[in-house]
Structures are given as structure tokens and as C-alpha cells.
Image (cartoon, rainbow over all chains, first blue to last red; front, side, top):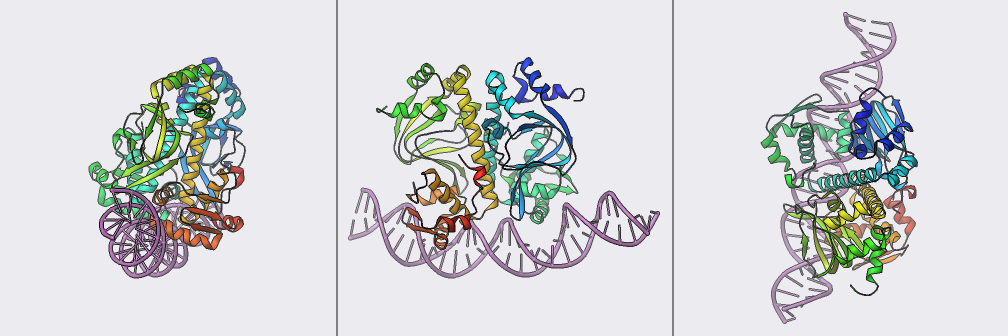
Length: 231
Length: 231
DNA sequence: CGAACCCTTGATGGCGATCAAACGCCGTGG
DNA sequence: CCACGGCGTTTGATCGCCATCAAGGGTTCG
């Protein structure tokens, strides 16, 4: 582990509240591994042997359907994933592959479950992490049911911007085809959706998205009221 | 609370593991209320004051969108709902209304959060409940993205049957329009979808669904492999 | 008995998927 | 250095699923 990284992982909401000693125990028995891009980390149906923490790189969670893969989440560092499978000790519902070269901390699932039982702070953090993830999924489900594809893209851009601290211009991570699948549309329609959004205050040049007119975009995308905000 | 009900609630996964004493404390400070049908219990955006436990009746969780309501879940007894909002102490993401006359146990949110901190068994159960709910939502999201509407209905029927212990014939709870919205379709298309399923081993008479040919239905609906099963 | 209301059935239209082809980018190899 | 080839994206044309609009049964309840 590189200097400054362990603190960064320790600062994650999931690990922040646990006793220093327990955390050391967990980290010392975990493996930090490097993976090349486009490598499958695990597949749906497998037993959840490790909690994964993406330290650096980019990871895609997806479900393989006959004909195509459906992207469920794009994981950016520093962030853990597949916590629910580890907690419940059940098979993965999703598969995972690296999009970019990635370094991932692998925390043995059994060890983590054991520490959760032992360390109240960790259990509390786990509970909260799951509850927040639950709410994210409720929002995603509503989004998919309520809005049409171009509106979903508009909201994705607004949310992404908000997560970047309000940055009006940013670069899309990964391939657009993956983003398309995440938003529940085809690459062709994503392309057209970007085209349509030009009329609503968004400009796009290659992978760089720029919000020219937030109000216009908000008016078009009808984002969730701030009272239900993500944060 | 009627005789036999308290044990039934106490047997819920959420409350099963907690200390008897703590459970008594929680129950004694909760309110069992009776609600008529079509009554709004709470609305999205409100603070989560109570964990709700549906003891008897039927409840719909939905999101109001301009033009229509989107059903997110149909809650059957005995079951708790909106746990994530209570745990995170954040506003409801969904609204709730009774579909049938219902009796609901209202557990003060602050009290529950306090007991979660105090009782390790309860915290563990809460964590598991959230993790299982998380996985349900992942499945719902893939279902919506991957399958078309008639297939979704087919899978709903298969899952419903499985939850009833394999019953091949059962009655749909609540209005079909609500089911339609839950499955992400219009009432008109739900009706047509039922019609189409007749060719795939399902008969429908009013609210009564009967699976005539499980294999045919499975072949059509392409259910998730059992390795990812709901249970 | 009538008036809602829900479900059903039919006709039409639009969003997004699919099919198809051209463009641009980038790495490889001549 | 440039030509080529592969791949992702874009653009265009068409198709199909599902939403919408509309109207007709059936049931329930006042």
C-alpha cells in the first residue's frame, strides 16, 4: 500500500468508525492487488469471498444478459462495492470488471463479517452504508420508471456535477457505451440524447461535458427536489 | 394489540434477535393504529418519524410524479417498511397509502435508532434487513432494464407463486392498475400482457391467476437462475 | 337503478431499439 | 512517417414495444 492510501481507506465512511485496532487487523489480512483493464474480477452467482475496495482505477458492475451486458454501477475510487453480498453471505448478484487499470483492496468476507460482529462502530457504519445504498437504488428505480432517456441523461449530468462540488465542466469516465447501459439506453440513443441536450444548455466535445446553462438543464431534466437530495 | 399478534411481530426477522427486554421497551412505546383504505400515511419529503410495521391490511409505497403515481412496492403483512429512511434519519423517498383497511404499528424513529445503538442483535437484524432489501432492489432494477413488460409480469407471477410456497393458483392483492405501475407499465398493457401469457401457460379469471404450465411460463419469462434466488 | 370506477379491447402514435453505414481516433506495422 | 485496420461513436433509416387516446363491458355502491 502506498503512503497516504491507508489513511484514505481508513477515512471511508465504512471504516471510519471502527476501533483502530480492529481496523489494523482487517487491513493486515487483506490483499491489495493490481488488475489490468478489462479483467473480470468476479461473476454473478459466485460466492462473495471478498469485500472489494477500489483504491485506484475504475470498475464496472454489470449483469450479463443473453445478448448484452447491463451496467448497474460505475465504481470510482475510493469506494467499496458489493457490501450487501458480503454481509448476507450470498452469491453476487452482479459481475465486475475493471474498466481502467485498477488497484483493489480485497477484504476477506468471513473476516469482515466476524469483525462486524465484534466492532460496534463497524456494524453501525455497515448498516448506514447499506441504508444509503438502498436509497440510491430507490432513486435509480424511480428515475428509470418516471423519466425518459434524455431526461435521465440530463439528471445524470446534474448529479455528476453536484458530486464534483458544482463543477460545470467535467470529463466522462469510461466508454460512453457503458454510460449508455447504466442509464438504460443504447449507445446510439445516448449519442442522440447528447445531441438533444444541446438545446437545453449542455455542450459535449468528445468525453468533455459542459453545462452552459444550469437553469435550462434543470428545467428540462426535472431533477428530484433538493429535499430528497442524495447527500 | 390482539392476542397472538405481538408474538407474530416479535418473530419478524427485524425484531427476532433483540433482547426480550429491549423489545418490550420498543413495543410499549409504539402505537398500533387502524387506518381506513385509501388513506395517505405519509408523503415523500417528510421526516421519517416512525418505522411502520404492517400488521394487517395492504399498503402501497409510491412516488408521485406529475401526471401519475409510480408504485414502488406493495407491502403485505406482516412486514416493516421504510426502514432505510428511519436508520439514516432522512426524509422519506416514497409516499405511502393504505390500499385496504390496515392496522399498522408505529415505532418512533428516534427510539428505534436509540435501541439499535443499544442492542447488538437488533442492529445486526437491521443490517441484514437492509442488505436483503438492497439485493431485492438490484434485482428489480435489472428486471426493469433487461426484460420487456410481459416477461416482467411472467416473472412476477413465478416469484409470487414461489413466495406462496409453490402455489399454482392465487389471487392478486389490490387493484391491477397498482400492479401495472409496480411492474412499470400501464393498466392497458398489463391487461394485454395477461392475455399474451395465456399462450405461455397462465390463465387469469378476474383477480385469480393460475399457472397451468410452469415450464412453459419459465421458458417464456426467463427467470433468474436459482443460484441468485430471492431467499 | 344509475353512476362511478375499473378493467378490457381497439386504434393510433412516439420513444427508443435495431439495423446499417460512415466518420474519427488510435495503435500497429510497413 | 504514413497507410492500414480495428474499434467506438455518430448519424441515418426502419421497426417494434409500449403509451396514449378512445370507447365499450362489468362490477360495486349509493
